Image (tube, rainbow, N blue to C red; front, side, top):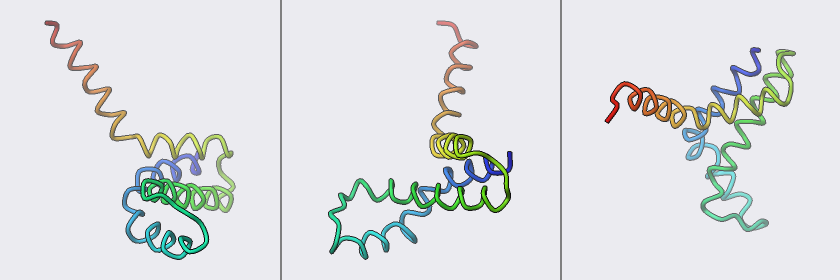
Length: 95
């Protein structure tokens, strides 16, 4: 369970990892591997999931499925909450 929670936090923090972590890594890798600019955020997500997986392994908490699922929920968490709010508001306000 703790690994799942760590993965949710890691997924949520992915946008904040782009500038300090992913961009320098892309600069190091670019002479060797072609990386599109849109892939920088994906690299940040991969790093976040790698860290969440290591944390889950160290805490002996969570399987790979729950770590990945938690990361996805964390990454899309704000969008999911907004969707749920829209659905609730649509039920309250029938037009």
